[in-house]
Image (tube, rainbow, N blue to C red; front, side):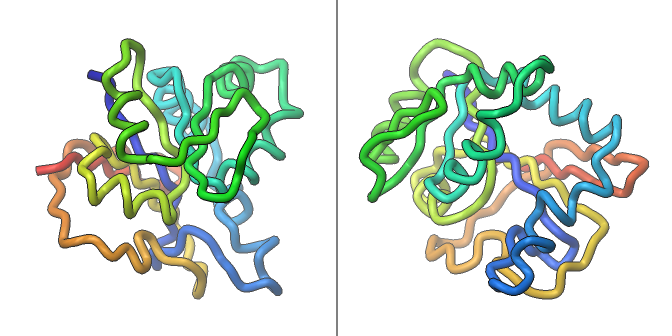
Length: 188
């Protein structure tokens, strides 16, 4: 069975995204994280991406990532990401680009994907989709990238999750010279 791996950037104060309109351009992970993206970061990211052959994304993450990635080409990382089949959980999209398929019945479709032969399924970003995935026990590993930055306000990791308490076991810790620490958790 394939593993579903959740990989998310988190500030020290638990922020995954800043939803304040006046600061969105500076407080989203792609902005506050960039000063820490170094060889360690790139190597770990490549290891996680290369272990997967499929991406699972929520609609909001998909829309941002598709815009950012579709124009990238020429390096092995970008080429691999762009070539991967992608599944987008959405109640509103009817079609998708960027080698993506829209899925509506998340628990059933993700369980089916996990049963298919292949490498890991990688999920980027944390948001509404995670409520369903965690509630149905579909995430096999959480890779939480803690960045040494305090954002101050925004959307918190698993904010408003609405599922029962979920206990996890620390499986691995990866520490980078930049100060990023990746905690890998698995279900107990």
